[in-house]
Amino acid sequence: MARIGMEPILSSPLEQFVRDYVEAREGAWEEIEPQVYDLLIGSEMVEIAFDPEALPEHPQAQLASLGSPLIDRLLGDAATRWSAARLYRIGLNLHPHDIETRARRAISLPADASLKVERVRAMSFPQAIFWFKTIFSSDQKEEEILPVGMDLHYLREVRHLDALTASDRLCPEPEVRLAECRHPGMTAGYRAARGHVVRTVTALANSRRREWAGRVEKQIARMSDYYEQLRKEAEEQSTRGTSDAAAIAARTASRRDAINREERLRIAELRQKSAVRVTMKLASIMVVQQPKLMVSSLIMSKDRIIGPLELVWDPLSESIEAVPCPSCGQPQFGFGIERGRIVCAACPKTTMRR
Image (cartoon, rainbow, N blue to C red; front, side, top):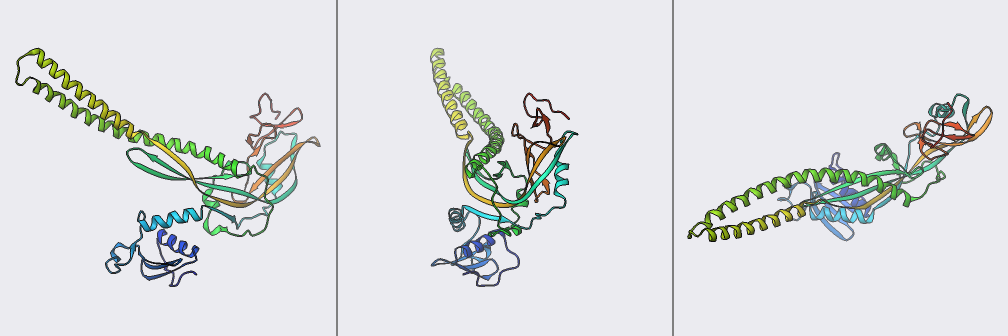
């Protein structure tokens, strides 16, 4: 069962989430006045208010805001129920004008070589988006949700996530059923995504460590000033009640040692407490099946076939993607011919003939 009342023209993202959550649970919601709702979730009836000023008029309502127990419970349940999804990217042009000319312009070859397109086939290319939840802990705690998109075909990071995941271009069903391209699988995609996000997390951790270390050094400086004052007071107190120089020196040394030990202990505790600790875990996955064109080509030289070159046309960016070199596997747009094989500038111990 979906909504009962009229859907408001404008609403906050949190309100939209709550309505979507209720509908996904096959419940019902009714907006009894602006920002005040009755929710039916399963057998539970809940009254909620997004506006704190509405609570006096609705004493039975629960406040719905980020961090409130109700919203935390709904978010946690949603994350558990829908931690993975599969959608299809629609609205892409799979019939670009003169794909062979575009391919020849994209790929650089020696003057006496040419590219010949043999076959163009539309296929489904899975783009896996991984959301990693990262927690930075010290004397305080901060959380970051880091998304990383991976093209499973090439195991490359997706550079246009916003365009890929535009909400009005995702659908639970494809426009056309397409065969899925070859790819090494989700596990390999996860490992590659984790490698990408670890570099980002390392940079974020270093930034926080510098920021938090500066704050800790200020606290340590204030603490050192405090203990220095204690040492001065201890020296003054040691001279009271006796004129014996040896007794004064022993008493002063004893108190100074005790203050120094306490200072070192407190500073060590402060440094240990302020050390940055990082935990990271996979929060959710979404696979977007995006149609692309597989362009099977041949590299020719003087009417002789040198070898095949498989290209991919991405209709989202309207461009040919970088091609893995047949010899070394490095993504390239420029190739040469060396001893009857296709090579690139990154190939070791080769001299490309241009």
